[in-house]
Length: 472
Image (cartoon, rainbow, N blue to C red; front, top):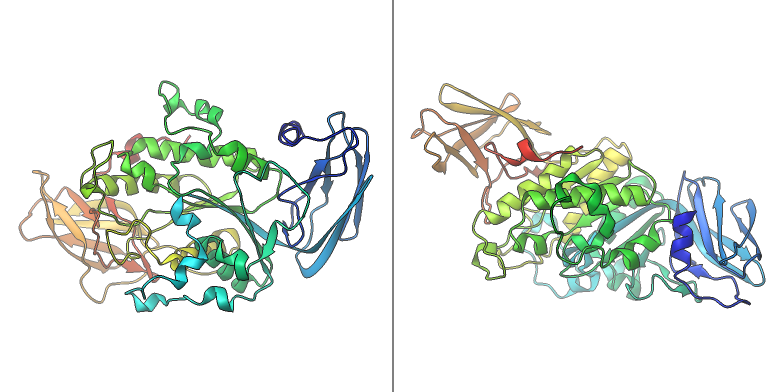
């Protein structure tokens, strides 16, 4: 209740104020099923408030600051539109409300990347992944609802009650493509309503999305200054959402921090983001699925911090460390770009689908494949490297490309690789005593290592981060 009071006191009201609601509560919204639901807002101090929804009627009295909160009992899935009434000195009626699954998607420009852009891009080269350029025109699924956060409006009370929209027409054109295609896949497979909240800003670093005081809770940052405007966006674009119940988060960000040549520090920042957001929503096991940034020629750019050809692979490595935290998942985009000069690759429909595969399997317990091979361990025997992976199911019919191998001199050369008996065997005639193996360890990856129809994550066996990154 204390956090709600802090959030709501950001709004101004007069002594004779009408009932006011936050932007996130409006007609057309989706409420999270199977969890107690917060309905909150403003009124005159001492005013009696009643909320009626789905057969429930509950009352409360606004406190001395005019803040009020009513908690509804968990709701069952409902694809049938319902109405909610909030009554006091005035009456607000919210219509067309569904009950289902709610997700927040956040990050920088690749998450913000709007649906309208798909109609203008050239036809992608990978025809196997399709090209839904007309998706906005044909989108008529009223079971998907969207809420686009406006950084200047979320802290203001809502007088129109139309901030949520059905995912179609002009509202959809402005909405996150990744978020929409995630929702489309989940809604289709589960057959229930899905609500998506997008809160993303192009060019943003990770730090502004985290409460400034959250960094102090992580030992790694106790003797370090955190740059990049920590906490800048959190109070206006994340914190006001925290009373709204959700199932989990989708995150697509990292390019800005990669330009700064961050490695292990980024892994710890992500750890703080995940733990602090879960804490803010008061659920320590909320799902957190995120996207590994796409290949790009970082080494050819000139910025404030020098970068080289190892910058992006090492950043991918840092991102992969978060898979060691509970209830997290990451999708690779190594194969989802037509040009290494494009910082905003266009295959957003496939990114959304791959995120949905994680959610369907791990959040909703469907029996679907959700990840390509993820490196686990290696051993060396008779001049060959024997690699074990999670999520490796198939033997390879043809040679696998993208692997390199090194001996004690540390010089990596192209290697032959084949999947056999649940392992990948890697070798090179030139190296008799191999000590290390890498896969797609380049900002221009071209490896063809797949399983379950999904690409393997880049990795190196000579990995320092797994030894130094602490998950506790």
